[in-house]
Length: 121
Image (tube, rainbow, N blue to C red; front, side, top):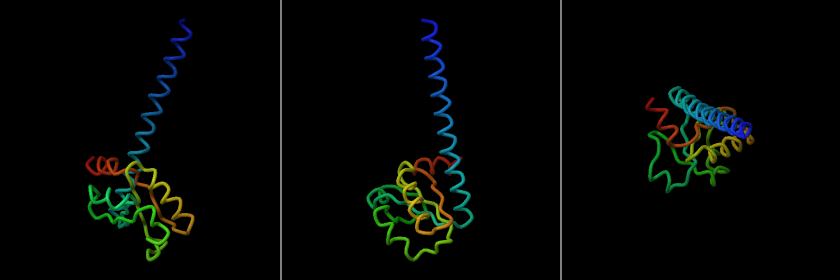
């Protein structure tokens, strides 16, 4: 039975370390995002208009992910851009698409609450 407890303890420790690591990298991406915004990056919320209207970051613009093919057509591909969404998933998709079509300075800021938390720390 001792072996089972040791394995369980090791598993729990590994999961705890993984959770701390994920939180650290998430807050780091938001910190980097704010640094870029302070240096003039365009702040883009890729959530739906309804989500944006309910709550969004000041000075952000709403270019929903489902319009990304046309929404960024008038934006310089060398413009520094920070994208965010609810959790970081849609903004990750936006970043990947924008890089695929030639944008060179796109950063995934993560989720809205993550960005708000980083802004106030």
